[in-house]
Length: 283
Length: 268
Image 1: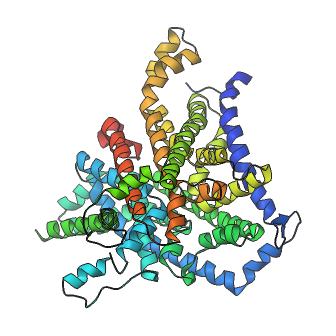
Image 2: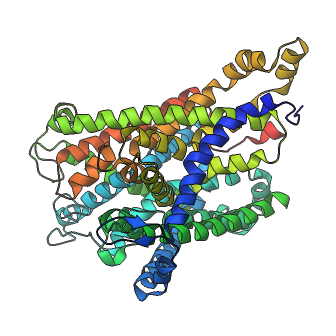
Image 3: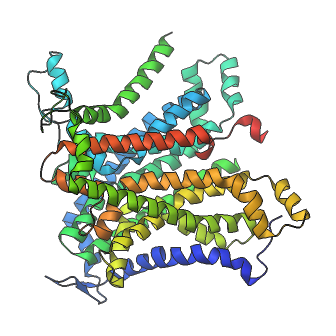
């Protein structure tokens, strides 16, 4: 049924999308890489050059600290999200179709929320005047309301809030395709629902879990506003720093160098996660 | 018995966790005075009216909706011929174009945003309102590409063969057989892109942040100067739009399938 393209006219259809993606995605990318070697000009923008100065700044303790914190935070967020989302997604795929649809609409709505709105929502929920501590005070658990943000806990909570629906949607295809006879067999052999989940479902989807962890890690690395809205300056991540350097410090070359670095880290991780995902299909 | 209780507790806590910030924001949006307090004091819908009566907020709303309409149309216009080509022809190198279409969504958004910032500055168009439409259109091309690929996969080959046997050429088949079959996938891809474009902040900010204010940009800018209840009412409006759009997709389409589930009796 599928043919090789024969005439030039056959290529015409793909020419437009290929052209658009080249001009507006590949070329911007190339320009960004070029800018990362440019020289910053104080008071102006930047001028063409070929210097490694912007990359050399990676060796400073300031950058190292931010990189370490970003990686640690993203890893922690990814682990918490997957630990919560894996059993949830398993339960979800066993629900009636109608219940699944309701949950999916809810999760998609949360996922599509702007980081600005998530940050605003959580800073309100953690604020002194309208926050959750007021509830605790009226229940007699606390003496007086207090503000819980900015803090590391607030950043973590906001980021897990953002990554949880994403994690569920990444896990959803694999879990909904899991052969139900696997669990039925375990149940017939006398193991309870929790044990059959832990001993059958989790090992069967080992590779999906690893690749999901990596995907969520990359997603969390990309979080650019929540550390700024819910945390202190010491909680800033690489994505926040890139925005700050590009917009407020107008140091495009340094921002571009960090972005190139972030691309390389993300791409290699995504490649690893794809390899893991493939293994499972082959098995 | 205990298992059932634990299960309910787990699901209940997740509902609470996911809805708590939205409930509080909805609550403060009804405050009568311009104060951030919950439970709300008094009841007023003024902050919802403000979105439409205040010049700044209304302009931001129009900007956001305009950008989202333009960007979602553009993303479908780019994704459709690509998905069609991948379905119609066997050409391994076309996968490269496909990967390019998927990449903006997988990479951290800051990278795409910075790429556009350097591109528009170099092209001398930095700050022009239309640049954000193109930027979003490319950034969200992944969504219609994914839904359209699923749509083409679902087309029954025998229908196409029947049409071809009766002498229909590619164009006729596309118009009379394919288009009606994949229309739901076009609409859902466009709807996904529309909702996400409405909410998108960083790409819009880096492309036109200093000349055009979309709603997320306006909320972020206002957050830096303190609190206005209109932020809360806009948030509620956004959640409502998302629920309505995704609800409609679920009502008229197969949402679990769009998100990658398939039933066991189907693949036999």
